[in-house]
Image (tube, rainbow, N blue to C red; front, side, top):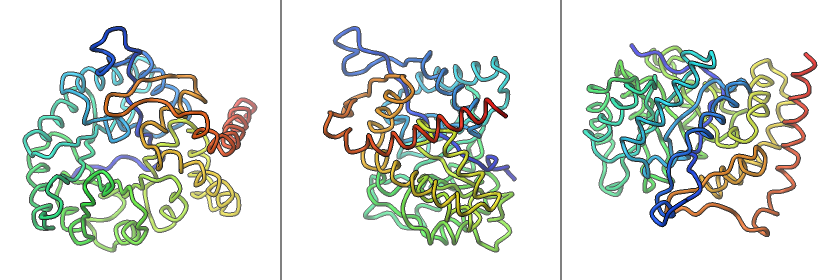
Length: 326
């Protein structure tokens, strides 16, 4: 049986692209590997448990397989050289086909990833059955070189939804070891994370929320943690929230959860663009996007979020100071 990723806070990191130098690069900017590795190392030093490369926040659908190999292998090499050997790296896939998905998983394994995060295939969502989804994931898991997590994100999968019984059925596969649930249905988190089935135990199947604003309730029903976009900007804050919940300090956790929930609105509302804007403004690392995404948020749009991001920035700086005094 495959072992799931260890519990904790993970970051679905944005893919960094360089400022265009040519007309071609204006539409297909090049990978910025130097900034990519700086950000990954920063997250590790902030005690982020692991990272997801080439997930939805990583613009996976705009990345070639050659670039996939280059990016993952570069990050693995940089982490190893910085004494973060075996640092958890989960590689996302977002294809519609079985063969394409397996190819990407093989490339990811060869480049140094330990798990795959496989997005449900939503192109034919209106006529896909739960039986079809079970067979699709089973066919991939049967041939996958990596243990895989099921990525359930209806908003980017044409509203395709996996039923609780589909998850529990797939959990018995020896290569399927968890799920990332990026939606507001807490009942599904509960049914998976609290399931009494042996195949759904925390040691065999890790249920992660993809929304940090749900971390408190998800952990209380047995969830493993979060794979959270806001943590790309404020990693210490999300780690602090996780630790407060795990040690039972719910009064302080509720206060911090409310602040995180307000900040998460930027990532939910603006996706990759919002995450990159937060990283640029608070960490100083700028990145292009690949079309049809366009980087940047205008002044009036950003002003809506400036207040809560200022509050989160104060919390983050306070945690840096506290770490320095410990």
